[in-house]
Image (cartoon, rainbow, N blue to C red):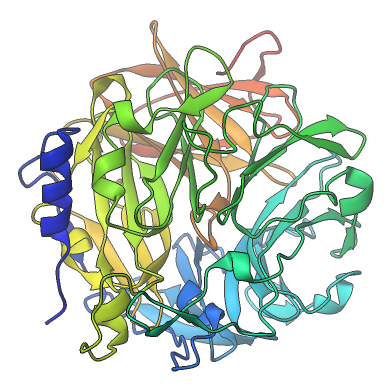
Length: 543
């Protein structure tokens, strides 16, 4: 039987005294079989310990055929394919098509790059990346429209309109050169996967949409070519409130980067100045996945980054300004994450109490602590249980896993996304496991408050838009972004748990900085807001 790591979490928490334990907080139920999902990721695990094997792949959630149901795309690994599953009216997932890839499949970004109303796909690999355009529910390989697409190992990608021209541009994180696989060993003399610092890093790339469904490399003239770090996560939002989209990149064992948009196609890196390049002690960590959300309820979007074991995951939160700082220890998030290697991550409201929770998919990348006599079993060696943190008032958290399929299941967790898959008003979890079966966990937690979902309709894209709910003296804020987590993408309505609060208006700050206000009529429903149909509100601050 696989070894459960729940005990190690409880020991760490007890010794640190950092958080209090909940009792049977969450109920995420494994519905993979019930909903007919039969996807198994092929990692190609071998005794050659090639690094892409252990890095896993991502997952995307989006409505590819405009039928109102969310569908799933899993990026394959060693089989060099991405598999699309369509959700049926009876909540079953049917395998629709397999998209061929050039190299070991890694990540995926979803967005309407040609402005025809259908979501398109950009898939990263260890070879040449692939661009698939959606032609009314079928996908056409348009990779030849990438004006620069060399063979290189890329990871996470994010669509975002960086020049406010109405067309989605693209940031792609580069990792390392995997061509010459190094030989590394544990303290017991056993072969193991090497850390990224023994490889040559690959540069990130910023692509500008050429308005014809293709992309051109503008990295150098954007001022981004000077920094080459092994990147694994990337998100897009307007960090400084100037009406232009910025990028935050999680790098593996090197400082994270915050690229602030200066306009006219130029960017400057300000991660250190903003407090998001390293941890509280000035140490660069093994950045994996990124989540965005208002963790402490102050109206500013915070950042959460997952890391390798023996490093705590890091919460970068605001302290009365847009600049952030490492608040991991006072938030109660540090000690429980030490035994785990976190990858996919999401901020969400599980029980609709109006407080942010955090879900993390875990899975090891090294064989630390395993003796000579132990036979190598990939799941037992690298598998870990997942984590779910319950949000408390004041930006604090506690462990929320006691009786829960999501937290009890052991896999080599990599990609993780959240979305209301079954359209019952709460957020479900989807996990892509390296070398194992993908899992869907339905949210069955009893709710303590109401909910609201906001579907944004823009003539081109709502990626990076800021959504704010306002009531009498209070507000809630979230970001509409398809990028984030680890190698994964979500294109779905923005979800709010309301707790006991009442809100009367939705304010949307679109990607180009324009602000519109829409009335809220009713609760526990999806509100669709269309650009140009709201009340103009130029003087209103949204965050």
